[in-house]
Structure formats: C-alpha cells, structure tokens
Amino acid sequence: LIISAEFPPFNVGGISIHTYETCKYLSQNNWNVCVLTFQPNKGNADFECLQMNEIEIYRVPRPTNYDDDYQKAYANQNIQIKLGVLNLLNDGHSFDLIVVHGYFLAEATVFAKDVFKAPIVYHSHTDYGLNVSQEDRAANAGTLSYVCERVLCCEAHSIIAVSHYLKELLI
Image 1: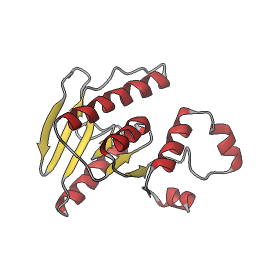
Image 2: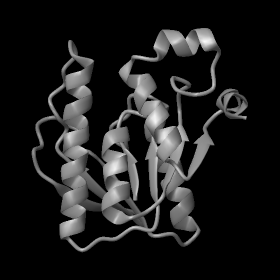
Image 3: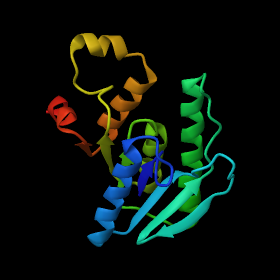
C-alpha cells in the first residue's frame, strides 16, 4: 500500500511524480501496487477505485482546504485517509508493506500500519525532523511538521531519502 497526498493527475510538487514513478517501477517488477490518495478535485465526494496500467488507485474525497489553519488541514486529510484505510480493510485487502511519501499523512500511516500489521517504508522529502543542527531542532521542535517527521522516522522500518542532501542528514 502506498499512501500519498499527491498522485497524478493532482500535482503540486515533486511528490506526485515521485510516487507515480515508484509505483510504476514496483509494478514493472511484479509487485502488486495499491495507492491510497485523494481525489484530484475537491468536488468529488466519492471513494473511488480505478486502475492505471497495473496500479490500483483508491481515491478518497479531497478534504476542504484550510489555508488559514494548517492543523485543521492536517487533521482533515488524515481523517480522510484513515477512512480510506477502513474501506480497504472492509473490502478484504491486506498489505505486506506500507510506503508513505512525505510527512503530512503521518497519523494515517501509523493507523494503517496498526490496522494491516505491516511495516512502514518512509520516503522522506523534507528535513523537518531529521538530524539537523541543535539550533534548527530547537527552533522546529514544536511545529506540526517536525512532530510528524519524527513520528515517521521512529515508526518506519526503513527510511528512503529522496535526495543526496537528505541522505547526508540521515547518515
């Protein structure tokens, strides 16, 4: 199961493309790949299952955007993905591995880990909770992004840095 806030055709930054390329690679190497992500448009309120090549995509409704409240947006997105996890469980799915791209869905990813009893592989796209300087750690310690990144770093069986810069921070 791959969990990502972004997946084509919805593309804000690099996570969407990186997630798709990861799925494509795994699928071409005989892995059964399922993606849990959001609908590309806010207007679609349905839980939807579709196929893109050999990739199964499960889309949950994109929650209302809270531009003025980061914590509400975080909570809302994690609730929607948790509902998607429950839908997958109710449909009889099981997963051997959970891959998450980015820190923003940390709470829902840990929930999926507990539900499916599967290890997490965390693709880190940011350095909020990594081994940065003491000053940076102290400045960011209370932020939601820092906490989410730290949770995933602690809960993950493996961490994949998506750049050489992040790799150096992890070592």
